[in-house]
Length: 140
Image 1 (cartoon, rainbow, N blue to C red):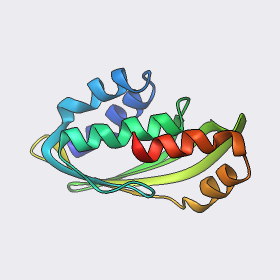
Image 2 (spheres, one colour):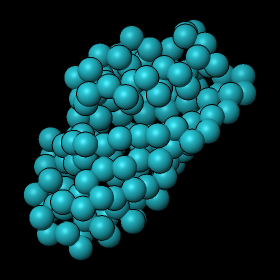
Image 3 (cartoon, rainbow, N blue to C red):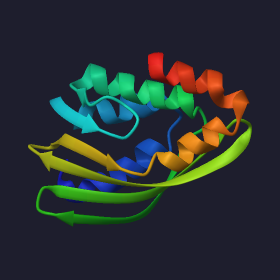
């Protein structure tokens, strides 16, 4: 996979059912020593830790959907801006994300996700029915 191909691969993967089809789609394009960083989760190093991070994310947001807004590619760096939508405490929640990937040797080497987790956390705190799911996502 080239950096220019990643936006299409990314969008196709997010359109799949979560977590298994999603993970099966991305596993072949992530380097075995990749590092993924995103708010609210510990840094993930290697395929197993990356898959665990996404499984915990999907515990928190089982219906998480993502819409790509725009992309940019410069050399080995790929930026993908997206809007995420999910249900938290039986009500919708939406938040913006920008992911920066490094793609070399045909694989994703790094991913750093930029988003402000505060609106999601505040939404969760105002919706007590979401508290068990919030706790499970931290320990799953």
